[in-house]
Each structure stands twice: as structure tokens, then as C-alpha cells.
Amino acid sequence: MMHTIQSVKINLNTEEAAAYIGVAKSELAASRCSGSLRCLTPPEFIRIGKSVRYPIDSLNEWNKSQPRFKSNAEAESRTR
Image 1 (cartoon, helix red, strand yellow):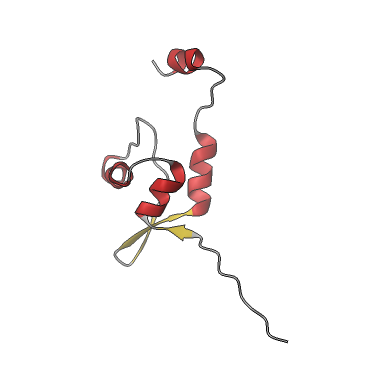
Image 2 (cartoon, helix red, strand yellow):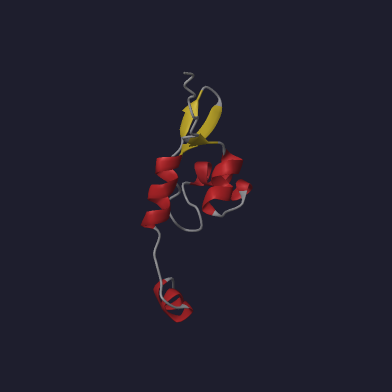
């Protein structure tokens, strides 16, 4: 009986991470220097050699930490 190992990607590159959280690649890359992504703290990243990777767990935590709204009026009043 042959066993196969299923690979699960746990670290995404900048392009993949940006698509995953719904921002532009350039925005995410710039957030590493500025420390801000759309006036919010950006997701954590790691370096593997010269490569930048975003652990999927960090991206999920970042998504969960974002403010949630029930209407545009609520969003507008809370983001001013």
C-alpha cells in the first residue's frame, strides 16, 4: 500500500498573501516599511533567507482582528 503526503502551504509569498487578505501586493510590501496597512497594523511576516513569507496563521489572525460593521453608516461613524 502506497501512502501519499498531502502538502499544505503554510507560508505565502507577498503576492499570495495580498490576494488572500484582499489588498494590492504593493500595499502589503509597503506596509513592511511603514508599519501601517490602511491605517492599521499590518500582518506579521517572516524572512527565510532573503524571501519574505506570511504565515497563514498570521493572516488569519490579522483578518479576525479587523473591525466589523453591520452597516456603512456604522463603519463611517467608527472610522472617522
